[in-house]
Image (tube, rainbow, N blue to C red; front, side, top):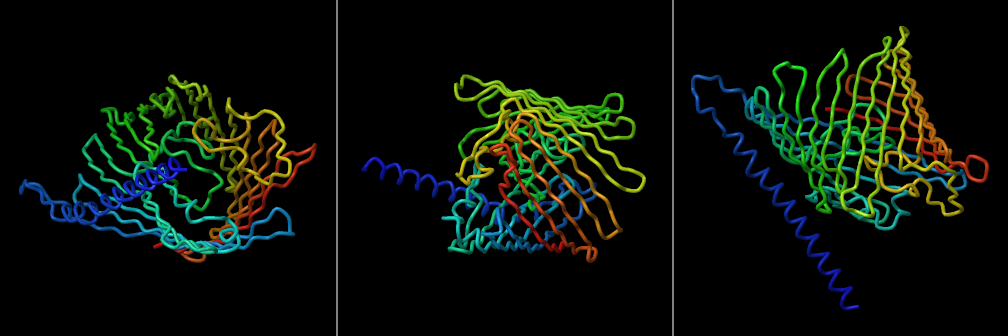
Length: 415
């Protein structure tokens, strides 16, 4: 018992220490970096001084959610989502960025989930910049800083330090090359996608069509990804080659983007090999996609995903009711539960203001299906309406069983 209390005390002290470091860093940015940049002057009077600019933008969204497995139990929830983007351009060589998302959540799902505010407060970054300011049964207000970085820009070199999105992915749904910021395709309401506490340097070569990225990050578990990516163009195709350390694995990857007969052709491949870790497994993940826009503006896209660690047989969940949570954590080594997965997306602009789309995903072997229809309508230049549906099915005892359904009505005002 005494040992348990000591461990809890040590965990609490570490958590307080991390939050203190986070608050110290944010305070340094607000009261140190921004004032310094605002007072920065060009020492060479013969050069034109770039006008300092401070940009503020973002959006405000309200989303009503109806979720259910069957009509005997229906959950009603509401999400008020505000994003604030601050950008300070001190000169043509130095830029500071701070971006945050503020979410007020209330309803049945929040009320029925124990410690909901604590669950979503988890920050995977090295610094804890996620706070559930209001954490009450049935209502949670959460603030998260997902971008906080400095850009140093040169003619052919760039350096970015801080929480940022390192986007090395190419295809739409699955990104085996996205080693730093694996994202959830089904989380459509988070367009910006998560950031990573990292340092990234980029150098452009003389030909103007090739570049080299070197990046390293560290997460809350003090694990890190360190990698380099070389991009170049050959025969009308954009290629990229990646190499590095992915947590406890050596990693190699490649990707491409080009055209075949007027259709876009893209793909990504990654291979992971464990380094002295008996628990980590070798993995090969690959995806390719084709997309085409017809003369009548109909857009079709198809994709295939192969994951060597995926499941290739039926999975019996019984009456556990755990649904999609049975498939574990999303990583670059495991982007979808099944070994082989296909996806088809179609969209059509009915008018300049109205667009309809339909997406479907099927996981072979385990027979997991997903379908998502959506409608978007532009009320005015900066106000949009969305109606989105999501349904998941999994084969159980020789028939597809509905795991969950969701209907989402969202209005978004951008500023």
